[in-house]
Image 1 (cartoon, rainbow, N blue to C red):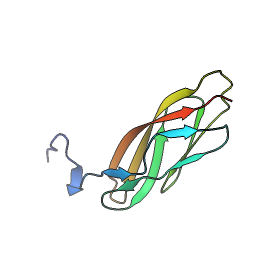
Image 2 (cartoon, helix red, strand yellow):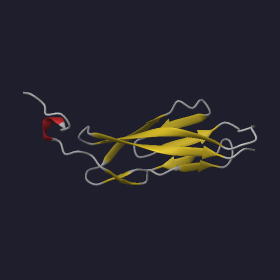
Image 3 (cartoon, rainbow, N blue to C red):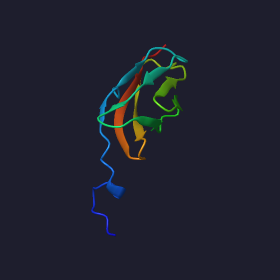
Amino acid sequence: DLAVLGTVSKGEKPLTITGGVTDVELVKAGTAVDVTPTVAEGTVTKVTATTSAKWITITPSATKVSISASANNETAKRTAEVTVVVTDETGATASKVIKVTQKYN
């Protein structure tokens, strides 16, 4: 079997994130903000996220991902990109990049 570029294997429908994955503003260190994705069809079974920012902590779970940060002791807000990845019960995945901003202390 040859797979067609851009299609999902095994007859699975593509997964579409319909909501819940939006930009985040973190107010102070240690306070987490939950990102809880919704999908067009199916059930969210796993949510993960990645970032290159060393000041962001990501805690994945079955239905959401929690994002928190270390203290921002600079004199300006800081911003980073986080890629949120959602998996459904068929194993299909979808991702969306959000912006995480933290004010300075």
